[in-house]
Length: 358
Picture 1 (cartoon, rainbow, N blue to C red):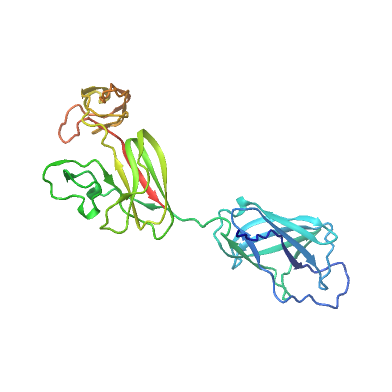
Picture 2 (cartoon, rainbow, N blue to C red):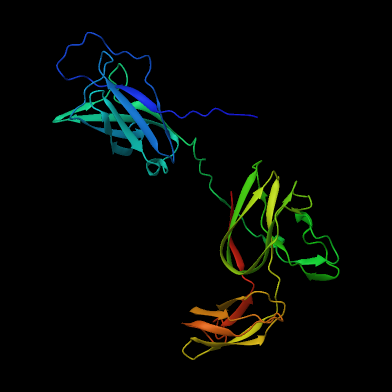
């Protein structure tokens, strides 16, 4: 059995605080080096300090208050300022707790810190070395939480969209052969995103927004741009889905892409009735279509704004039910006239937008 030793310890730093009690000191505190603090982002950091005098003996800090400041390395940008808690006045021991919320938004970088003492009207700096330096080094690190990785955008290029395909034919055309010369053609029901280079990462997360989407979504992988693509996730079916979805792909794959199929249902058509005042009054279905499994998305197009409508139901035989107007809008034209766009109805199986990966 393999075992690993993990250490849980406190960061305790000795800091020189000039003793103002009136005593005379012949010795001089002369450390070899000043210890650097480490602040871990996103977790609670408990930092302990012991104040000693020139003879390396504890300083009585009764009646004193202390402030801890965290800055950039140059000392010209203040990140945070927090009061310190006295643990033992006679032994000169204090602490400061940097909560996770204090550091989560900091950029990992070399920084610095200082400590200020107030006792009555007397304000004093604590020194971190023998040269009266009141600012010490501090490393702000991402060792607990991973550093932020921004998401990259994906597109759905036209070349990967629905296009004629030879029938019969392979189900996984490589990208360079997505549109072979048609002989007997049918509508290609699957379309694809642009490529995702994984750069050797074992985990890739893909996010997208669905708008009344009915269809299937899966992820495919390939060794190179001319390879046959294979499925690396299950094909998930969505019915009239609206909202964000996330897909995690685990494994080492040189290239990934997202495959979509929203061809379950087609042919539905409708006409729109617009009043002389330019508002949408009703929508009449002229062709209920066939093969629908989810309630389709209904859009009102043309000049005008604000009109909305929705389909009420889908019948067991795959035809769509009535369409009702939920918002009449304004400014629509019942016919095309002198460059205006006539109001029309678009019935679809929804959309995929905002594709991102990381």
